[in-house]
Length: 64
Image (cartoon, rainbow, N blue to C red):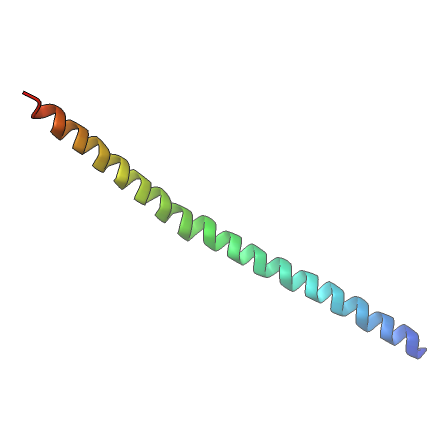
């Protein structure tokens, strides 16, 4: 094989490998966000909504 062909094969493999690695990292981060961070945020929002509702109920019960 000519030296240029080997260089081209190496560059092509390096590019494909880099893109594949970047895609895998992005997929892992996206999955982590969907399965860990978003459910935590939703739970915090639910707790905050319940707290607001309880405060409103408490104020209404003591209005006189």
